[in-house]
Image 1: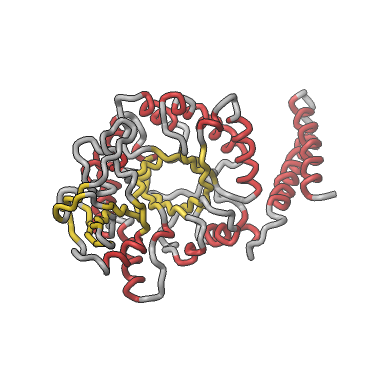
Image 2: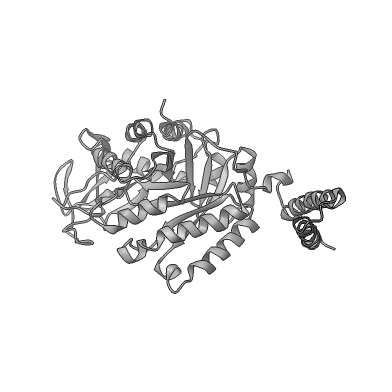
Length: 391
């Protein structure tokens, strides 16, 4: 008899004994047997749940308990590469992985008391025709099978009123189902950089936040909508990011649930007309009602930005209004302007953690730094990690 089958069999006997007690048979032997059977179920269940664990220490396959909490969370988004071996594990509390399942990563994280949470994309199709129950069941099964610590939802569809209206119920159902099976599991979802109070989407996000452990406010991609002019600009302008975080708190989201998610990437804009540094006029492309947008800009990770910076014609330029760096380079006959974030700009934004009493910070993503053994490069990467932890 396998440990799993044995656990199921003993569990059924335990239920019979408990029913016996509830029906009035109060003998000491009956209660003693119930206790022993319950302990046996627990022991066998633990054994069956880690019997195929490949960690050097099998207990590392057990998800972290609910009692393991941190005053400030640091979430590292993992893109699926092996770069995780070089992360600064002294700071990480949760890894959010959207790549292929890597049990070596899980063993490494659990050994350092860090959770590993799967990132799952969800769209309108998943929430249509009552599909959400099957979706939840499948995800819960996968998470338990892989010994993960929870789930982070990323919305691939535009959060219109019809889609967002279903989010509170979805998060509520996930909480009920997941917490029953995994009391220490972590549930989170991403949200736009600001909570637009003129739409019902904002109120739906606020309602959904009541059932989640954390709400990751994606404090970047502000230039997806450009309303006033059509120039290359910062990915995460300081004052707008501050206003965006404030908007969620003002609408009722518990600040301790908010995770400030900063970018470890930037955007390379091709200038249709280059006037001067900081005045790179881009192609006028309307997007979701806005007359202009940066959607045609190329997203590039921090490690590539550092290489481009060395070849730039301007060197690093600091914009004191947007509180962000940028530089100019020329490729063939076209001028390019690259806006990005570095340790200085990120450090300014991490001050929001204390100012608004946020639950933590995260970056998208940890693989975008350069983990070369070159001492100069290593120092720049270390500065990026240190920028996430305000003094």
